[in-house]
Image 1: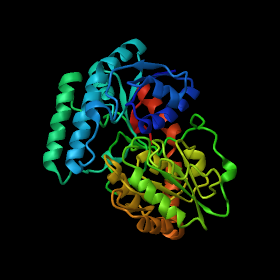
Image 2: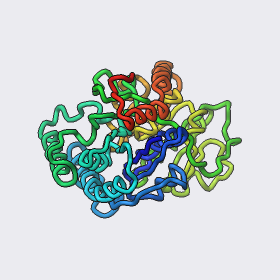
Image 3: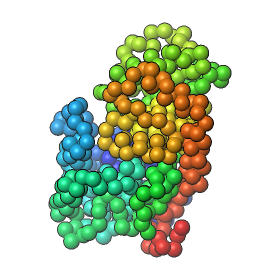
Image 4: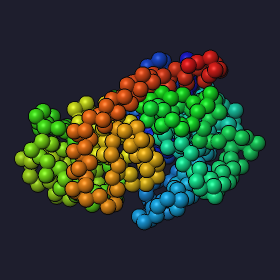
Length: 402
């Protein structure tokens, strides 16, 4: 049996897919460990028994990592790298190196945003794979911004000089040995990055720790179910959008029920005081995967995990990207025909309602979501990812595998 060390950032959307792969490896008898600045978060998502090596690292949204609300485009990308991703790599590196020395992994599995994993593994001569938990990097989003691309190349070169092998040549976001892409070209599009080391395994969908009790008998099978979620990292900016959602959904309660995830309490007391409300249910935490089995449409910020989980179930989306990779993912959804994009900061209830009606009732969106669902499930998910990692750990050539 082999040993695998997972290196992840303190972000739910990046730990969840890795947790599914780790669970599959564990079921095959392999030994696992993790490195993360937030060991408690890993144990909550991957199981309380998870072995987690601590390391330093910035907490998203705190201190200098608080993002100014009005920055967009290249400035937002620059802020993400300078305020979070680069400091995260530099601060995680000593802990990653110590974990490699103590645990002795046969392979390191480094999240694409935990750059210390790949850089330290390369420096120490340990085989490593990239866990690509967002597909945004698989399209050339900087093609029209050569100065930004050059700036990013220089930043990555500096990180390699500081914490990696200065003579190395690999892009720390893409292992030259194995890249696990948790999507498929059917969603990413015909221009998706290709390479001998890239394996399109589709979403890593695995059981999660139980959410608080959900009133399943509240659901009305005679009405369409719409699930609204902006993820866990956007609680500071979601109040206006969620309010517009409530208004749009209230106008459709003769045919629609809605469940809204509101972890930050952005809606305040709205729709929470009336315990007899049979139309809209607002909760701080929801059992997203079980709900998706019953949902007819999803309204989302175009976070990669939520998009992939919806399409895994063949559910079309209304996407309202906010920042980071979300505009790219939203473009993939609309490009594939599986949803409609609206403007997060400006959409009104009537426009949002029209978009919801379209994905609920126009068959092309549901048909496109169904095609992606078929591709996702054929790709193999966590099982396929685990098999590729087993081959990497034993030194097998990826050229010999499909």
